[in-house]
Image 1: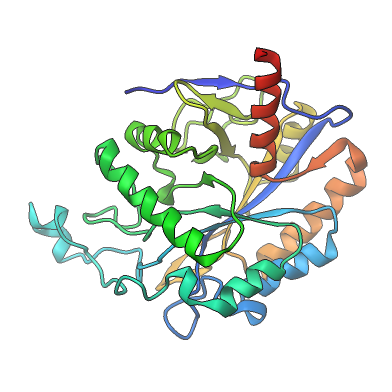
Image 2: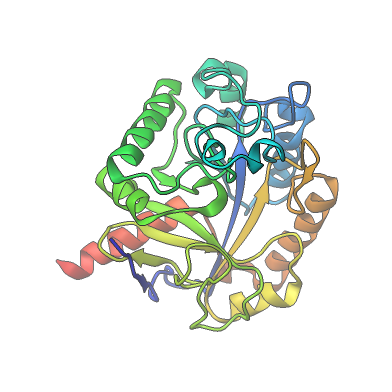
Length: 319
């Protein structure tokens, strides 16, 4: 099943020129003493830096895309095992954690910290964040709908067991969202998906995402995934982006979708948008300038809030 995308042009509330969302991937209870800080170091780690940003910018909201039962240890597959035909597609090519080690419902201090953060939305970021084969961090690949459905159900069961408030929207690991996954998400009543990233394409009103993940959705506006009720969002700004890109998105009446990753250094793999002191300083200056130059014309919000607004507006127009 192939999905097209329908851009939503009238998605902003009255009086708002554009919107800003800030999202962070890979949140889980892992501590730097175990392998790397996925959020488990709490106030002394990356989540503490997020809290500082929220404290300094009272207009800011954040979505933390969180994995239900994180099992990844290294994002880099073994070079030796990767050379073995057939076998490399059937096994995990790096060491992984036992199931349940990082289940969020087994880490009460982590859950309590997330609940304590102001203006914070919790989104979904897969069940385990692993897969057999060379793309080991890309959890959702070419499985049929029923397999994806079972994985998503288990993910939701763990989130429900945690009693952590969350929105029914997902950024799939590695941005990968095959049609079978989108169908399974729609069947289970998920409301939005953030599965495209493009930080290179020039900003225009008709620009489409054509870099990581899904190709074809609008780069700067929410889109409805064809054949579903899912609202799609594209990431269009990160640590290497310039102010002119942000200003162009605002001028076009778009959504400035800013991305970060909670993990800076994953066993030698360094994320340029990892939440460290340098990136937080960049974000601090960006948020301050956005607020200073645009003031109340900006809708500081979350993807969950926008998806609810879009669905409500579409339902009102259809009635």
